Amino acid sequence: MKKLMTAAAALAMLSAPAFAAGDAEAGKAKSAVCAACHGAEGISAVEIYPNLAGQKATYIVSQLKAFKAGERNNAIMAPMAMPLSDQDMEDLAAYYASL
Image (cartoon, rainbow, N blue to C red):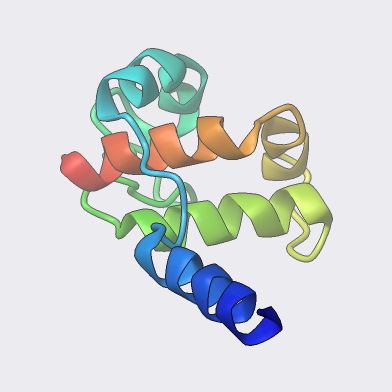
């Protein structure tokens, strides 16, 4: 019985997505504050701020999580990432990846 339960749990994990899918429309709505530095369409007018348009969603999420956790230090991005939920990050990433 224990082997059957373990097999069922493994199958459930394999069939589940690796991360929550982001909603690009929700991300667009949440991106207003990002536009100040990264541009309204994810293309920055200032060289020190990276372009976000077209970046892979997993990269954006990993960077936002690193800023939030303090693993990546930046005086501007750390406080911006702190209030973001995992779903906010996924939504923003989906939006910028779609551009």
